[in-house]
Image (cartoon, rainbow, N blue to C red):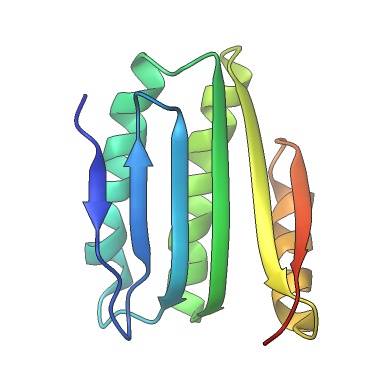
Length: 127
């Protein structure tokens, strides 16, 4: 299975989905013109990955900002990860947030309350 790699822009996050390592990463800002269009290949990749998921998958989410339409797409990603978790693979979600960004911490906690996958809140020193 190919690695999905998308360079981030001012409006879209950097994406690194590496099936061989069981590593799934999103980093940066997510305010694309069309969130559904941007996230569709990510969700499709996860659906394929689910068929041959590693016994352990690590998910690193380090977003500095995302808009409302992105939040729905991110939830779709988490739902795919939840399905992988339910099928017996260990999935660990690391939610990174700047120490002075209460909103991003709360967003991670909101996702954690919806998705039945272990989350680790990872504070990053600002600056």
